[in-house]
Length: 593
Image 1 (spheres, rainbow, N blue to C red):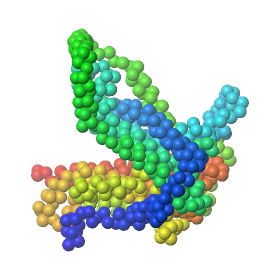
Image 2: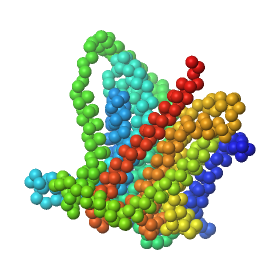
Image 3: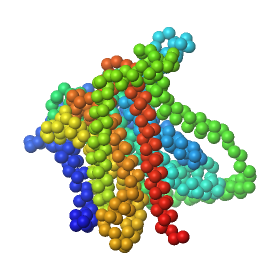
Image 4: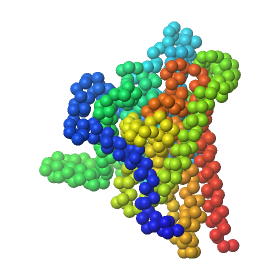
C-alpha cells in the first residue's frame, strides 16, 4: 500500500520499466551509433563524406525520397476523397466501410505484397486473363518495375492515410458546412472554405506517417521492384548482412533518419492562427502602401457582395434538385477503393484452394492440399509456433509496461508528459530500418543476437509504443471523478484501481495487447536483423520462400493471415461490448429504485 501511495505522489515512476527497456535496447545504442558515425572520440564527418562522394549512394537516397514522396501523394489523392465519402455516408454504412479499411490495415504486409506478386507476375492473374482472352500473346512486364512498387506501397499505406483523416473528419461539426450553404455558398465553395481547412490536421498527420513509413520500406520494393528501384533501407540491410563497416552503416542510417526528422520538423510546424493573423496583417500593410489599388479592390469586392446577395435571395426558396450523379460517382469511387484494398487478399484466399501444383486463378477445382502441406511440414509448423510464442511474450511484456507508462504519464505534469511521450513513441515514428539497426547494435553489445530473448526485447521496443497510444487514448476519456467517488467511500488507492479504473480501461488494454501481438507476429525487417535467420518466424519463412519460389503453400499461409484480422476485430468488439454492458449494469445498479 505504501508503494502504491508513493507511485500516486510521483506517477512518473510508473514509466521506469518502459524507459529501462527503451534505454538499454534502443536509446543508448542509437546515441552510440551516432557517435560511431562521427568517428568518436576524434569526431569527423568522413563517413558522411564517403557516402555522398559515391554517386550510387546519392542516387539511392534521392530515389528513396522520390518513391516515398510519390507514394505519399498517391495515398493522399486516393485517401482524402475516400475518407470524406466515408464520413458523409449513413452511420450504418460508415461503420461497415471503416471495418473494411481496418481489415487490410491489420493484415500482414508481407501477405499483401505476395498478393501483388500473384496478380502482377508473368504467370499472374492479369497476364493469364489477357492471354486467355487473346488480347496479348506474351506476358506483359507488370512486375519488377517502379509502377509495381508504387502499387504495392500505396496498397499497404492507404489505410495509414485514411485512418488519421477519418479521426479528424469525424470531429468536424457538419453544421459549419450547412451554415456556409445557407449563406449562399456553393457545395465546392463550402467544402473549400470550411471543411478543407478544418481537415488539414488529418492531412498533415496522415501524410507525415505515410512518408516516414515509406522511407523505411524494405520488403515491398525488393519483392516488386527491379534493381533500379532499390531503396536506402535495402542498401543498409545488405550492409548489415554482409557485416560491413559499422561506421558506414551508422552514417547511412542517420542520413535516412535526418530526412525523416527534416520532414517531421517541416510538416509539424504550426501554421494556424497566429501565422495566419500575421499574414493578414502583412497583406493589409501592403494594401495601405498602394491606396489606389486597394480602393479599386474594395469597390470590386463590394460589387461582388451585392451580386452574391442577389443570387442568394433568388435561390433561397428554390427547391433543391438532388444531384444523383454525385452520389453515383461517390459510390463508384468507394467501391473501387474497397476493391483495391480487399481484392488482393481475396485472391490469395481463392488461390489457396487450387488443386494444381502452381498458382492458378480461377482454380479448376477445390482442394485442401496446400493447407495439408502447411500442417504436415515441420518447418512451417515450427515457424508458426515460434511466431506465436514470440507474439504472446511480447504482448504480455509490452502490455504491462505500456499500460503502466500510459497510466503514469496521464497523471504527470504536461511539461514532463510531452517529452517523455515523444521518447516512448520514437521507435514507431522513426524509419523501421533505422530502429532495427539501432536495436541490432544494442542487442549485439548484450550478447542477445540470434536469441529468442533478443527478438522479444526488439519487438517490445515498438510494441510498447502501440500499447501506450491505445491505453492513453482510453485514459483520456476516463472520468477521474469515479476514482474520487470510490476514495470518498474509504476505498484505498489499490482497491480503487482494481475495482474502478482497471475495469473501465480494460478494452484499451485488450486492444493494446492485440496490437502488440500483431506487431510482433507480422514483423520481418527487425526480426531478420536480430535473428540472423537462425530463428525462423512465420513471416521470415514466407519471405524466404517468396524470394526462391512461388509455392502455393504460401497462399494457404497468406489466407490464414488474411482472415486473422477479422478474428482480432471480433475479439476487440466482444471486449468493448462486455465492458459497455458491465458499465451499463453498474450504472443501473447505482440508480435508486
